[in-house]
Image 1 (cartoon, rainbow, N blue to C red):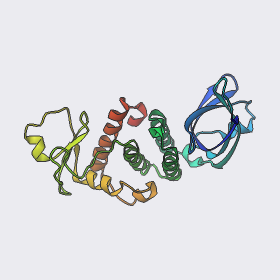
Image 2 (image 1 turned 45 degrees about the horizontal axis):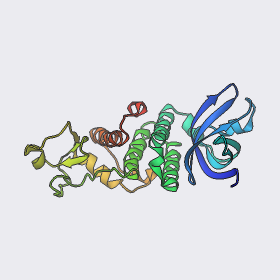
Image 3 (image 1 turned 90 degrees about the vertical axis):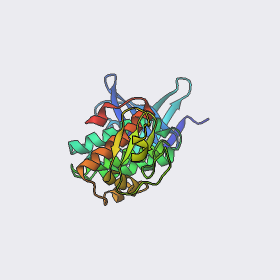
Image 4 (image 1 turned 90 degrees about the horizontal axis):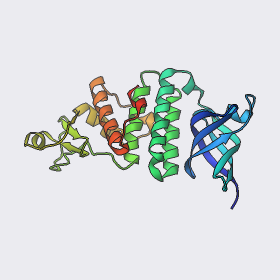
Length: 249
């Protein structure tokens, strides 16, 4: 088995290791998430290339005895400098990266995860501060689908009725279901619910299968945005079993 491996990869997280090295968590289209080390001093070309959110062709040396990986070369094809030029872009990109890490990139469809994350980061790279939260919301909602836990905001889960576009639904996080008005007032028990109004539901249904840049064509008022965000994060929290602190930035 070859110890030299090549990947299409992007960096998710970078941390100092020792006095002059860096541990880097990569997402690859071929193998999913793995950690590798970049060795070298402050003038190392590899350390400069292995910055957060960079993407390109990555060469790794794998030592099977120690199960360790060393970066031997990284041909960066997308630097995404804009993500480091504005706070809103940086924090949104970090939210995306940490969500992917916490959910192990979905657990198997590495190529699809890589494609989705790449498109989200490209969109954030040039977004203004008002658009960043909407791109992040679209990612959260898309990621619930990627994890296989996305609820359908178009119908009541309990009675399976189709809900009119201008009607309200209520989401029960503890059970992962939507309730219509009739089911909610008929004595159905459960924990606290999340309101999904007409604006939030229309937006979620409209952008369901769109790329991030295309989803931006659909506007969203502030109330609907908060409802859609609460819903998406509730689904992710239930799936993950915890709420990431970055989600509340």
